[in-house]
Image 1 (spheres, rainbow, N blue to C red):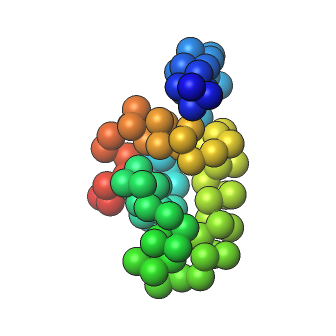
Image 2 (cartoon, one colour; image 1 turned 45 degrees about the vertical axis):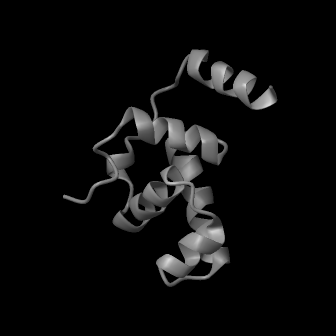
Length: 88
């Protein structure tokens, strides 16, 4: 399927050094953690007491900082840094 091919491409593509998820703000890490659990923007907004637009703004910033372009790539990056979404 298209998703499987996209995942294979992402996994095999040479990675430019991405910012560690641990270097994101605590709120951004909360959002990344929710993304890895499959939460929608609406779910994240409700859980974190913010508007969906604020979630979208955070996601744009996270994508840019991490060098990814979508939720799947972000989730894969987070999975490769398993301790990064926990707060110190």
